[in-house]
Amino acid sequence: MVKIFVGGVSPSVTVDELKKLFEQYGQVNECDILKNFAFVHMEKEDEAHKAISELHKQEFYGANLTVEYATSKIRNATKIYVGNVSSKATTAQIKELFEKFGKVVECDIVKNYAFVHMAKEREAMDAILNLNDMPLEDQKIFVTMPPEIGSYELDNLLCVC
Image 1: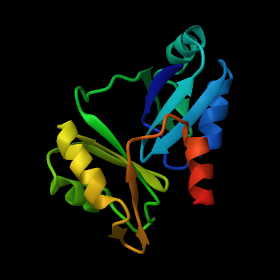
Image 2: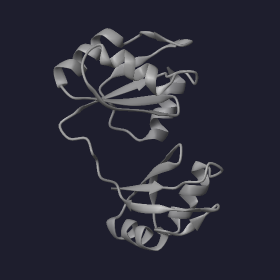
Image 3: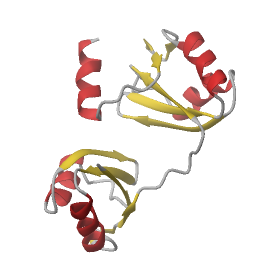
Image 4: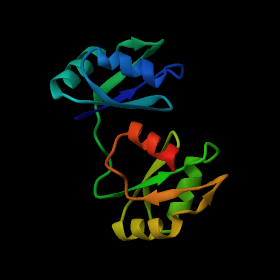
């Protein structure tokens, strides 16, 4: 699977519209929009390469897209999954909670869950032990190591909980 970064996404674009754009080039396994950028996961390398080469700098809903292979800036950090995140919660609030246990390298809310990357594994484990079931805004968060499933399955899993 190939992860693609899509920058310059218009605020009016929906996940389904962006997914449909990339599906012209092949199978899309996952698509998430975060503010003005997105990540698209395509199944095959050659299809992803074609999508990148043809969609980079193209106009989509009035904005020019930046389409390139996603590269992680985070190295040697421990990733933590935070589930059941209230729509009222902010990235700053989550980061503040986790910083009590160590350095937070990155923190992003995606729909009703978030990912927090901490510099040291020991600090991440302390955060997981201490923050699981912690109230945040109007509900208790679920804190654990990230499950190895896509966002569609995560959304369905969270609805069952």
